[in-house]
Length: 365
Ligand code: HEM
Image 1: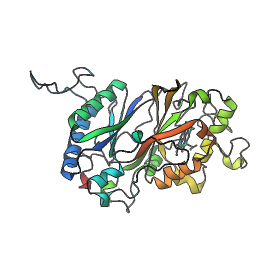
Image 2: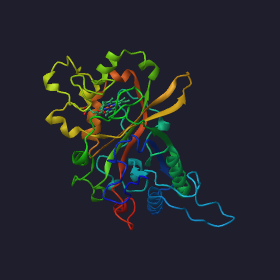
Image 3: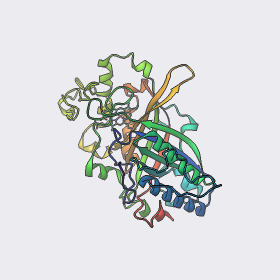
Image 4: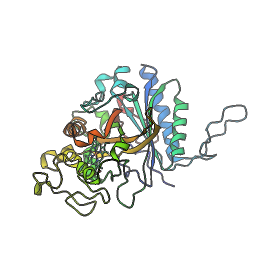
């Protein structure tokens, strides 16, 4: 049984190893507060902390006795397994405005911007809070969400929810997205990743240190259309091979592309996704971000086409310097004909709950 730490300087679920065999299931759930009272928010955060602390450790729920609704849904049986669950709580910009804490908002937290290739759908966007649930199995994610909503009814209400899933490595390396390409290969790892995601800027409010800016983009994939494109053309759009995930100038998935040796884009086109996303120059090094994306599958749309895509999730210490700069550079890339961002939001991942006595965002109040 896997268990990730609940207590610490940072929340789990950000630099927790990328979803593959472990944490193959996820839900991204946005909520709105039902009250503008700070006291109500503090009570809500205490409840969320207590429930997340229990759910991520697992255990046997108490028996409340005959004649009362049971304390647990028992969707996971009489004893709740940890099952690799992480609960990651983030705030949207609107939360700070709603409870009169605008002056304490993390400096770069704004509502998600609309970019040139977006097809925004209001029902799938923004939110006062985002709860990211990741676990080894989908029933664990469902159970955790049931538990959290049940204990917080009256304090917050569901706004939108997107589930996510990820396959095991096939045959090795990073898992594949629904366009058939390995996804997550070139992510920063270890101390380098920590340096790129955790907020430690002295200009930020002190309570926000150890938090991170989270961007969630719900991106529809036009998979039927994509499947009619030649492999050669697909590979040029990404700049990597579909079979191995290797950059087009390399042999292995982990080989680094050498753009300096290919200034005109003869091998890896200048418009390729990986080249635009990360030009690998000293000047763009601090624009790198950590991605932790999932696939989604919502069935069939009104035209009889598959409704599937990508829950793009990334973390950074500065949403303007990292995500927005990269996103602006990707505007108009060839891939935009095959994908449609329609939802998501910008959120601020709260610093970690330090110990048994601490609670989410305690430093904010
Ligand atoms: C790399 C797919 C959207 C940023 C990649 C790779 C794939 C991919 C296949 C190469 C393998 C890897 O290193 O992970 C997609 C798809 C998207 C999407 C299918 C939309 C449906 C985005 C967005 C951003 C982004 C919205 C950020 C604004 C990056 C970055 C890299 C990357 C930074 C690594 C580049 C490198 O360091 O070589 N993506 N991506 N991607 N993508 Fe995306």
